[in-house]
Length: 62
Image (cartoon, rainbow, N blue to C red; front, side):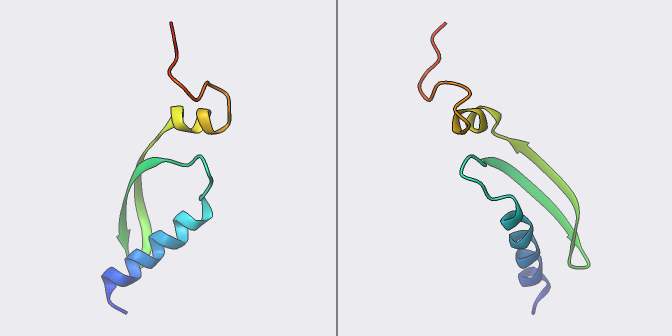
């Protein structure tokens, strides 16, 4: 298996651990030796709260 294919599989295994119906984010990974050694991410907190029905699903009126 090529390094790039192995890296893709490592990230896929990691993401399968955290899959939920409300998960939405932008994530980047740095891999070395077939392992994730650094992770950067930005969570969609508003989308998460909407999915948990903690804020309205429509526009918020002030």
